[in-house]
Amino acid sequence: MINPVGTGLESALLILLACAFPTQVWRWLGVLIGQGMNEDSEVIIFVRYVAAAIIAAFVAQVLIFPAGALALVPLWLRLGATVVGLTGFFLSRNNLLVGVLSGQIALITGAWWWLG
Image 1: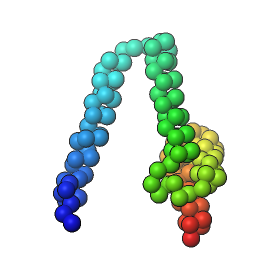
Image 2: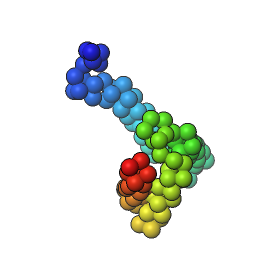
Image 3: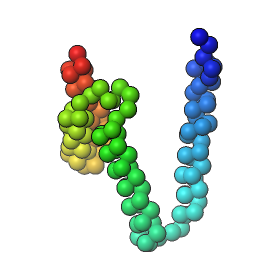
Image 4: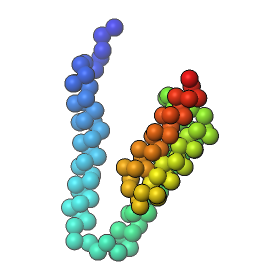
């Protein structure tokens, strides 16, 4: 069957243009608009809270209602990997990379053990 998207390079460029570019446009607009604003202003605090709520909702959705291969991993394992990641994050003095990697390692190891 012929791949309708094209080669791997064409697919990567399509993903970059369709997903990454629009996200970057909004980020740079935020930087330009927020430049010079007081970090403790009510608007900035509100934006931070909304961003945190969106991330929390996304994480909760992925944990409770996963799609794809993650749906094969049981809920207890997904929650356990989340706890491991959060523990790694806090024990490393809020190092996001340590938190993400420790959670991923826990999830991958647990899924490998569980799924055989």
